[in-house]
Image 1 (cartoon, chains in turn orange, green):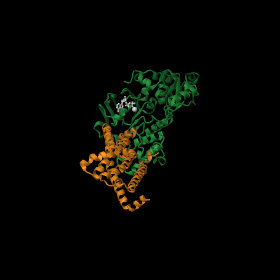
Image 2 (tube, rainbow over the protein chains, first blue to last red):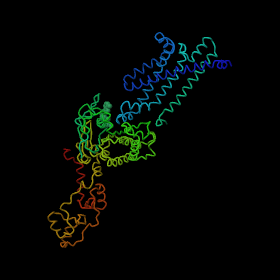
Image 3 (cartoon, helix red, strand yellow):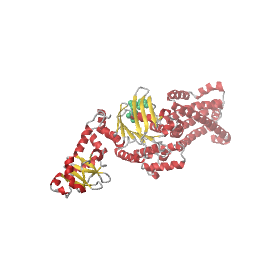
Image 4 (spheres, rainbow over the protein chains, first blue to last red):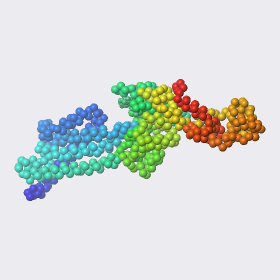
Length: 211
Length: 378
Ligand SMILES: Nc1ncnc2c1ncn2[C@@H]1O[C@H](COP(=O)(O)OP(=O)(O)O)[C@@H](O)[C@H]1O
Ligand SMILES: [Mg+2]
């Protein structure tokens, strides 16, 4: 099996690219989460803006990634920077929407009780809204993370590095071993991260909200 | 003692789209009172009580809590000084029973030990065994248990005023009656001002010191349950009371409320020789005999006196008659009289001293008074 041979021979490189891939994804998810959750919370407070903002995030989400890179490159060049920006933009729909939905679907009687008891806006957000909406927000982060792993693969095309680099190199040199050596870790990464987040979601669901 | 705690002065609320939910309402609530707000759905009960904790801001008038205009009070501090209990309870699903109860104390920075002590105390108070309930989550409680926790949470920081918006409205009739009884028991222990919303007149009568009957954003009558039952201000209130107004009133009133005082009808046991003269003076042909302490001994009739009891040496009638007590429920006494075929009974106080008599005429008057409004509330 030549693939396995390739794998063993290039294990150092593959590991390095895998770590790079994880790094790109991690940074993108971290920044997206901060931005997306903040915007999501903001539009629960300004619900008239919610439709427009979720709409914009939806449009961004539909732009094909190569087209988005094409727009970004003339302004900020190639490499990690346009990649992160693209990943962050793509993540916004899942994060904003899940944060928004998770919070506004909290039972109105809970909201009224909290307000009536004299909780400030901030206290209610911190002590009730975020913990109760956390499972839904986590599901948004999971969607964003898995998607970012995929999009980061394509971003190798514009010099972001990561496992996509192997795949593109393999395509260019018609080396199927190299393609597979890039593709399999990407797939494992995506499936693994998805599973990890499912576990995390479960762990972070408050006991009173589990069935 | 009974000074004004809450005052609504010409308060109105018109919602932005034009609904006049509360329409120029004025009233005062005194220390220790429980006021029930009753009326059909949509008449403005909820809006009225929410105006007090400023979940709704008035569009007209002023509201005072302890002489302070609530509009000038910090809204968070205001709400923390007013317990709030609602029909849907609104327990925080991710917090345990004790975390729910201790929330306001926590917001107010009580140390943990004091919070825990308070939680235990409140769980006992609302009839939930702390060991079994403190670590449960709301989704592990029945409807009645949830509302008990809701009440405990409302009481947690010992607020002087409590708003309860149909707290028992979603419960089955048995749990509901049980919680009403416990509410009454609790009320005797904790002297608080309570504003209690209900759409059920029976509940309003049972729990309220005074009742505010509302219609179309206005308070059409603000009176004691007795007054509402006996003198409904208009046909609407009479309708709310329902056809069994007399029966409801009977549960509410005590014998002391309907009896005749014993003035001029008593004679000390050692003065029976004066019986004839006393009968002539008072125009009664029966006298109630009392001992030196004023306790009921029996009766003496005109016939007995005529038949040679002038010497005072007569066997008294009705010696073994069990008298009614001033605190007896009217209905209970009526039933006892009907069963024993009595047309009257002596009434004694807790000290067994004679206070008056209750006759079938008293019952008849009471029922007819309940039917005919006698000139409103003024
Ligand atoms: N937030 C609101 N916005 C607009 N209208 C409201 C609002 N809350 C209540 N209303 C209206 O005000 C009236 C009184 O409502 P409410 O005080 O809830 O009545 P009740 O508690 O007696 O059933 C109703 O007509 C209701 O539709
Ligand atoms: Mg209501």
